Image (cartoon, rainbow over all chains, first blue to last red; front, top):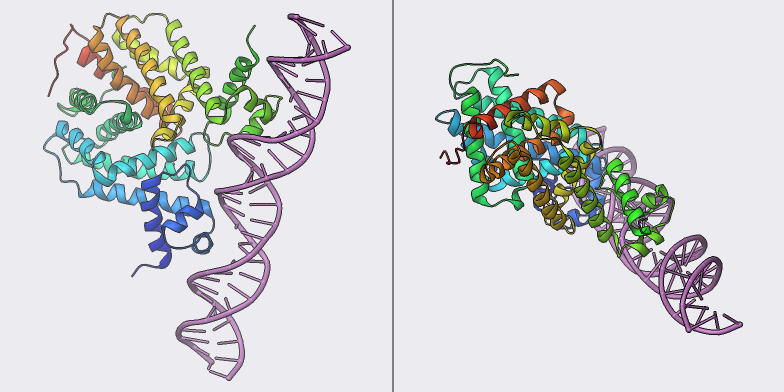
Length: 192
Length: 192
DNA sequence: CCCGTCGTGTAGCAAGCGCTACAGTAGGAA
DNA sequence: TTCCTACTGTAGCGCTTGCTACACGACGGG
């Protein structure tokens, strides 16, 4: 059985995934959780503690779903599978939350900047691991991850602006690019 | 001579570029501008009006700097030049502000969602125009723009997390990818 | 039995928010 | 002079924010 704090952390995470992180305030959150702001501040040191916990929880969930992803057939499908995973179900909301946190951290605001740093490191490792699983060397996998992750981020940031087919086409372009760059042998040379 | 409202809009934009959009509130802004919140709300209908104006102003500035960009030598340098333009001086701050606005609009919050939509449309047109200037057909230019813009967005979102050399390498990878995909003749076929 | 700790409810504080009511002042037109 | 419009300062309303002081019940160990 989880502690009350862990229960609240999970529930608060669900709420944040639903309503966003930017305008998050204690009283509406508490009410939705069937408790009071007083209680939240009993179980968490302060709001920053709560937010950091939420971000840690979503990070854990994201990495978890990524780990459960079955190995892809090849590099190209790996990119496509990742996009599928990242835009499906609850994971899409996790990504949205990450974008919000990153935006909040852009100007150095804490605890967002620190939390985003940690989250991103874990996420990059997990994605790189998925690329390694299709035979990509470690260094190449990491390099490809940076490109793929950045593009995914950008696409999700503008997701409501582009049509679904536009998104699909762009992801395909990206997959082509990754294959062209890292697909053949273990070519790890820079190009500039 | 500009109207008082236009003066305030420019100054408020500078302030927002410096301090971010997310925590923006009228009183500190007004004080920094040497006026009062009362005055801001005299010249602008309400805070949303002000914010929308700020976003329109930054959008105009961004598109302006992009238009003044000299034509690139070829497609590959076009990508590199764009990255250079987008991460140099005041333009970097404009991008940061856009990211914030997009994050705020992610959950449909107004006026951000609408403003971001408009801003993005103008921006995409301007970038596509730059690609056209190196001989890319219109449709290909637009397609390449979506990929490049998304990747740039993502890279800037995580900019504080990656090293400068890592960023450069990724942008080079992206440039390679764009050339491989759209570089040769006017190959506009899909690949999936 | 008593006591201390854990959990909870009530009530409220100081500060900040967007916004507004009201009272002006200045300057040009009639 | 008189009036009208454009602009500005003061003061404050109603509300939300994160957070806290205080009292109370439950429960387990001595």
